[in-house]
Length: 80
Length: 181
Image (cartoon, rainbow over all chains, first blue to last red; front, side, top):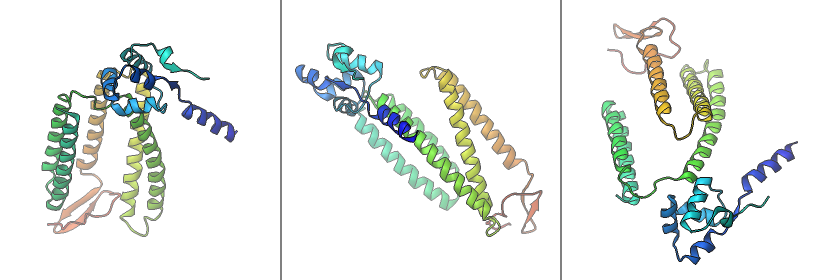
């Protein structure tokens, strides 16, 4: 039972989505500051997003996708 | 105003507040730090509106929420255990009882506030702050009323009579340490 709880918790916390934000940003020759300003967040949030250490809200995912001229489904990879 | 300048002002105000509060405790003047705290809060609110950059975003709020929850959990456990120890040792030192009571009441208020806000955010939209502010003002009013009634009611406290502290009712804390004139 305890191991089941630990497994579920580990899955919930560490299951970050992969994304192609860095590739798309570099393609557009855009800095992290510029992307952060366009998406309405701080630069640190973009750093965490690019490193795959943060799952954004739907609103932020949409904002980042819009700033990079792409769509959410092309930018984020949902791995079950 | 840039974010860096705003943060510099914030740090400077914090240092000034710390200095003024420490000095006011020495000189027993409590009005100046309260006035300064209110003024600092107003200055920061005014400056915050002038910052064009993003001060905090959704990740900051998420981290803040997690840190707050963990803080409440740790404080709840530590304060409860400390309260039980202080209350258990109250016969050894009469000062332990008020310390235990303060810890017990502060934990109760903290958990009560947490429960209220948790229920509030479960029911109401996170963006709707009008009801939140109203509830907060009402809650603060109730807390201050309870505090004022307890402190200024004149019941169960120590009275200064003929240069000596005399029990009035059944105060649950020892006589004040200050001289009775």
